[in-house]
Amino acid sequence: MMPDFSQLQCLSSVEEGDVLLPRRGGLLTPHCSALLSLDYDGTLCCGEAREPESVFFDSIRALRPLGVRWGINTGRTLREMAQFLANFEEQPDFLCTRERFVYLVDSDGVWHAAEKHNAACHSAQLAMQHRLLPEWNALLPRLSLTCPAAEWHLSEKDPLSIVARDSETMDALVPTFIELLRKHPDVSMQRASRFMRLTDARFNKGSVLSVVMQRWTVPEERLFIMGDGHNDLDAFAAFPRAFCCAPSSAHPDVISWLLAHGGSVFPSVSDAVRKWFSVDRTKHL
Image 1: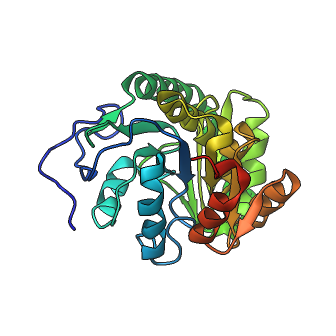
Image 2: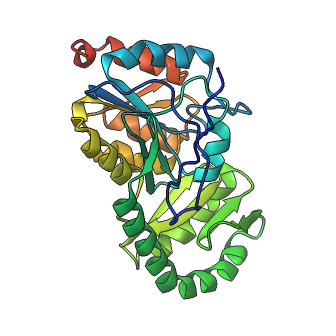
């Protein structure tokens, strides 16, 4: 069944203006009993696939009547996610984009921006960019000298973003960024595979998930988080009592961190959701 595109949802002027998102079919349950937060690239969608496997949507359809809501927490832009969601069998209940903006579905299936949060985040990011750009621009030539064989370029969408040829190349570039961050503890590095951006440290995948949890009054123990990149570590660290996991294809740093902090690794998101549903904490959903 194709999503309903009949209504243009004006989500937030602070990120990308008016974006058409699929209207989520069906109503939300009155109470949110648990929350699934999933990274997009490399977790929910792996390889060349741009949408999850049907077996994942089977799980979502089984969990929805129990009050379970789910969403995507990604570094992707809102416009990119709108394009991907058009072909989903089941629409998510929330979106967190660029590791800092929040969008939620209301009880009627209509999307709304967390406007106060998003506006504050946008303002803080602009102020941080203005403050950091002189040092950033001075750093870039040195980056080329430090790693002359590394292939990378600046992102067109963000003046403080780097796109490397591959994840291994980004591994070589990261120490130079860390050197800059030591002088700016209020700035964080958000990295996913070969992509990296600098952001205001107050906004990350953990902080945006807090906004969603507070809106729907979900306790930490009823939270499922899965991701494969370094930018997912903020969410894992923020919720130590949540069910935190990664796909087996995740970056070795992410897997090592999870295993050292009581997390788990699974072959796929569907395997992880089945395991989460079988543990004691979900028996009373």
